Amino acid sequence: MSDLSFLERRDFENLLGMSSGFVLNFTDQTFQDFIVDCVRLNIYDDRFSKNGQSKAKRLRCFWSLEANHVVGKLLADLLKYHKNEYTDFSDAELLERCHKTVVRLLNSSPLSDIEKLNDAVSSKDAVTILNAINDAVRRNEPEAALDRLHTFVVAFARERCDMHKISHNKGEPLNSTFGKFVNQLRDEGKVESKMASLILREAVKILDAFNDVRNNHSSAHANQLLSQNEALLILGWVRSTIDFVLSVDPPKANVTLPTLPTTYLDEDLPF
Image 1 (spheres, rainbow, N blue to C red):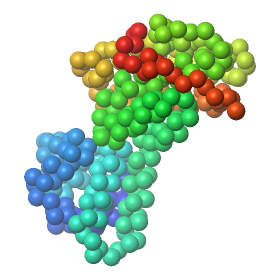
Image 2 (image 1 turned 90 degrees about the horizontal axis):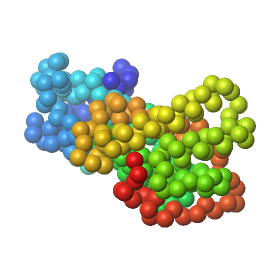
Image 3 (image 1 turned 135 degrees about the vertical axis):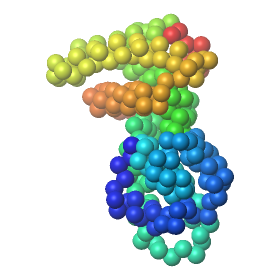
């Protein structure tokens, strides 16, 4: 569920004209179509009707049930729609408050600032993959991003091994390559506490399970996808792990990493 505050809700209710039970100038059909296009959810599902049948009541229920990044995406698109449809709207302060609320909600996404990882790998293809992951999360399809995230982490682990001149090969699964790099971090004394060392050791085991998720629960193959909540848990865990690695072992200054061959980023991966 989102954590919209009372004041944030009131601002959007005023902006969207919800006191009448309507939402802007939407009909039932255009309201449904707009939200499906925005976040791939049907606002006329029964779960959004517990407070009543009107568009405004369904939207309030949506705010209560959906996660911050989903609510933020919808509200961002509603702001754009409002700007296009109501060009003579004069309450600039209300618009600014609503915009700040959208930014706050979107920044709570597990990959909200994913662009910061652009420097984690040298391959331009990997940056493209990061953008695809972010797009999937914004579309409320985090489960569809798992195979791309796995591909990105493979590229990341291999480049870190290259940076430390650690031997590895294409036939190794992700957890093996990452494990070699983690061992190097510990040997160099870059992991100070016993607990952090234990977490990284367990991370290698978790990445072994990520191989299974990629093969059997992602869009890489004809699989039954994970639930959105599980997908977000995995996305957030992978992101925080990479953040930690970069904090204790940043890319070396004035060193150009080799450009990844295309085989690093193809679909014929050994896991």
